[in-house]
Image (cartoon, rainbow over all chains, first blue to last red; front, side):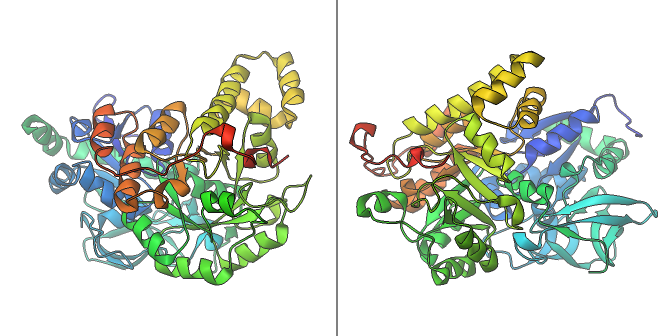
Length: 208
Length: 295
């Protein structure tokens, strides 16, 4: 897997949504997962997952739980991060059909459209074609559609030519739900980033 | 789309239920209430014409809401919209599916349309949530295709006691089945009147195969947190918000309490100065128990 440190700790934002499903995947990969609800929970994490759920709900709770500032700070220091579905929306620099008061972290240079594949009746399963020629299962639930990617963004997976799995530096965005399929490819991509940013992250945790 | 695409499968239906975990689903009767709920952080809304407290007061036959009213709420918010069909009323469910609601609640709060059959939920693309008072009932609904189970509680009372009874019954039996040996599993299936494969699955996994939410009687942030500490994975709040003195702050406080359910200092903070909760009624004064509906 290319995991540099023994048993890295991955925080999973646990305000609302499918956080426990991500924690189960992390446990299967032998990684320590930690539910993040308060600023203290961020101490010493090596990477972060922003799960699927409702982005409007999470956005409100990020403020009331006093997590927005410390999370912004960690992401600005290039903490490895994976955002799935609603988490992808929170990482995107521009969101169509978002609410005025819904603010994200702008970590990925993307334009995403909320619920652009339709309502639940249009939610679907499909294989996702990876850039390396393999394919993995994808479950898309009221999924956001990536409509524009910036020059720094690498497309790692697509569905009918539309990007659904992308990376920019240490930030990975995913329009579907890898925590529901039993295929840990996407989680491994995140864990692979941990070794590459050790200096940055340990500096950050020393200052906290 | 040119790729091989599947819709309406079990993983897709259960997947939306997974996405609602840790959240609050609020009953709303107008687009304005739906916006208040979304602003307060609701993860979904239940569109209906009357909240359960009013259905209880008015009596008569309670049916599916007017499609125009449901569409008004769909247009008002971006979060998932649920709506209720009567138990066994598969045509109301067909109509709700054609409206594109995100979840159908086959609900005992409405007057049942069939005295022995629930809806065959496998034949729908839209996922269903059903109420249950015990594990057998929950497993029968799952075998019919429910993608989410909620406690029935006693809707419209503002009294959490029945929901607590139902959660304790369901979760207690799941724990006891985890201790059962292979011969006892057959007896459990017989006693619960539930399919053996589902009982086996629970014995192995220690949990229901679909998310278990709490509904029926939640009126305060502490009620929501209690349900979560007992093992519910999210909460429905029906009359408890819009029958209270000041709905918006109460809605928000219940959302925060559901996230931080295990942190009494946060619960104390969010419970302050919310105005009066809905008055509520004791179980002795309840003339018709909705939780007895369903088979």
